[in-house]
Image (cartoon, rainbow, N blue to C red; front, side):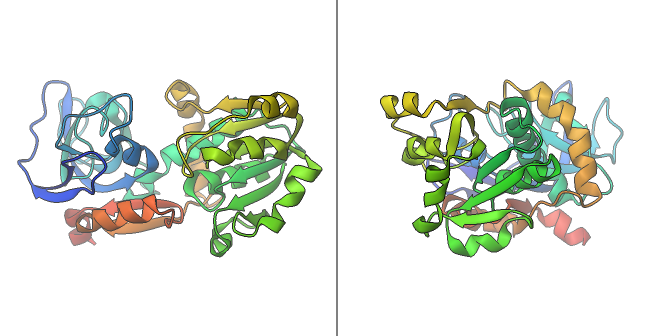
Amino acid sequence: MLAARLHEWGSSPSIDEVPAPTPAAGESLVRVLAASVGHLDLTIAGGHFPVSPTLPYIGGVEGCGIVLESETIPVGSRVIVRGAGIGIDRDGCWAEYVAVPDTALFPASPAMTPELASAYFVPATTAYVALHEVGHLVDGETVVVLGAAGAVGSIACQLALYAGAQVIGVVSRAERKQAVPPGVECLSLDEPGELQHLASDRRSDLVVDTFGGDGLTERLWWAKPGGRVALVGYTQGSVAGMDLPAWLLSDVAVLPVNTISRAAAASRCDPELRAMLEDGRLTLNLEDFPLAAIGDAVARLRSGLVRGRAVLTMPSHSAEQ
């Protein structure tokens, strides 16, 4: 089978011909139709994640496919693959076939394309958890969402609007404004004059920050005293130097959005979010890449050029279409 494997930390995956996996007891064999390419995949590929697979390894923590062999799941079932260390401490979904523990398989909605089914769970549930489980959003509050054109940020904007919030979206470059959901006031980092009022007014109750990096201390002042910053990601840098006196003076709580420890909350909100995606109340932009273009997908994601979520489509799925 064809698979995208990483041979060195921090490098780009290569397309290799490898033997198809054989499922062990308690596992199923899945023919992969589509697999997402996300920031967690890049973090693991960089070699800095607390848990690391053995090189070379097949990446991809999420996918969607068809069950070919299983002792517990009907053959032919369309399933979502996630969890149980997939793509983290064992081979993942960037391949034509994957053998996974049955606990990592979930029914895929027939109303979703394989591409959407493979990509929606992490951004949708992360956005919900950031707003409601961590940020404790209240109707009528003002929310600033950084990375509003990205997968998590875009859905966070939409969910905040549904919750009755006033939403301000911040993007990294002005050309990304067109990808921000309607109803959101949109500002850009490369147009600093647009951002000045965020610190001078300090009218935001909650900041959902997917950027991280050295600008975090400055962005604390976008929230009002007693406000909250829900830190989701680090697309602008994984290290933030904190000016402690400034932080104390800002009187703003910085709250981590740990999706691993909040897995139960993510599972609880999944049915509602899935229904909203199915009927169009929520949308998630997808950029499709064939498996052979994994290098392009990774490069675009690293450069912040992906609008929404990058998804790999497997050769067998393309043939079906």
